Image (cartoon, rainbow, N blue to C red; front, top):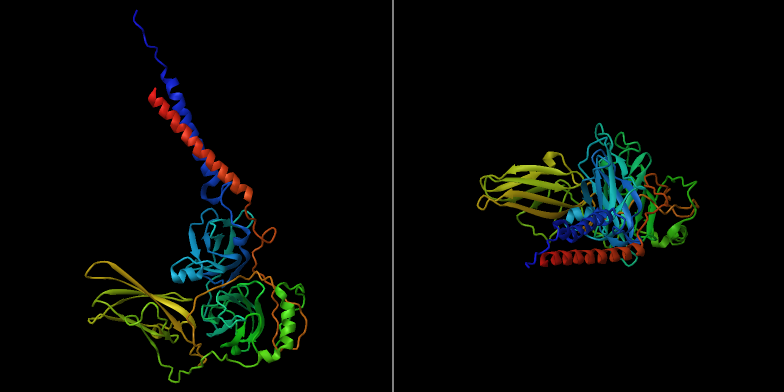
Amino acid sequence: MPVTAKKTPLAKKQIPTLLGLGILIVSLIAGVLLFGDGTGVFAPRATPETTPKNVTISNLTDKSFTVSFNTDEATSGFIKYGEKESSLKSQASDDRDQLSGSVGENRLHHITVRSLIPNTTYFYTIGTGSSAKFDNNGAPFTVRTLPAPSGDSPINKTIYGTVITESGAPAEGSIVYVRGDNMGEMSSLVKSSGSWAIALANARNSDGSNFAQLTDDTILNIIIQGTDPAKSSIFSIPVKEAQPVPELTLGNVPPVQTTEQTDTSGTDSNTPGGLTDLLDEIASEEEASEGGISENETITTDENSEQKTLDLSEVVEEDRPTVNSTPLIKGTVAPGVAVTIEVNSETQITQTLIADEDGNFSLDLASLGQELEPGEHSVTYTYTDPTTGESVTKTQVFLVEDTSSQLALADTNDETTSFGSGDPFPVEATPTPTPVSVLDTTRSAVVSTEEGSFQAGSVENTIILIVGGIFFIFAGVWSWWLAHEVRED
């Protein structure tokens, strides 16, 4: 009697395969929901050491603003921003990273967002090296650019100085904050040489409607915050005596004589970081405050105010040539080649030139009416090689001395660094014998959170992440085994 093979329904054969595929699809969806884009339940979180603190807005203009903050450990920092709350597609990195072209790790972070639209609200979130997103209790932070100013700034001066640590090394990575009566807060990084500079021509008044009305006698309140939160210097100085500010050691104040006293009434007397003790120490150590220009600082004069030339065909990448505030930038390429020159400064300068019959090109900043502030800058020039057709881009870093006051800092081979205006250092209004007026450090630009700091992740989430990963691996292996068995049948 012939044996008839009993056929298994197709649906039953496909059940294990369909079940395996179903598990894979569920696992994929769960992975996206739980781990995707850094917002899921088990997404990696920043540790307390990399959580932003003292978030501050400074250097607010019609086209830019700066966000500064500190972290307990060195990490990278960045800003995601956009004109719509639901679309933060633009990103800005730390000012030092923008200059060097590489990502660095710092404890004080200074991030400037440029090329914005005047009188426009922008939304932004903060990120650190952990790629975690920090916002204002679930919603992005907001900042509104100022209206375009009318007329010219009443003052075209740059204040600058040098800061060193107690060991005598440059206080690189510190941040200088400057405030004045009816003046928006400004900030600058202390560079690798210990120098810093802030162009007062960019100062805006408190409501942002126009340029700040500053004169040589205007008293400026200055805070220099070190990478260690316990180290800072707070003092007041008139504009005319801040070109330069005498060299100071972080934690002390310079020997500056002022005739006006900033009102510090109503400030918090609980001074973290020992600043109250610091002020008492300053009063008893006047001998340490004598002198003006540091012994390590070279005073030079530019009697003929001659324009200095930056020849891009002669300098090398490791050099930091020093020029005046209106240098002549020149170089050599193939004849008739179009060269685009970009000067990276507080004001971005971009010009396209055509090389002459000898291949020479030059950009005269003086003829353009442009002036660079003291400190470190970079110039990038780009052209297309006519023989290879390839685009060539080269960058040169250079230093600008201050010729307006006939004084120049000797070593200004700098990098940039910064903090924020959420100042945790209020000063007790206790009169001291020191001639330096003490700054009222109450800040108005601090971005607040519900508990004053951001919430970090926990160890439990990390354990769940590991267990979940193992589960997904076993689920994938099992579904593969089921599919293999189906193929064998």
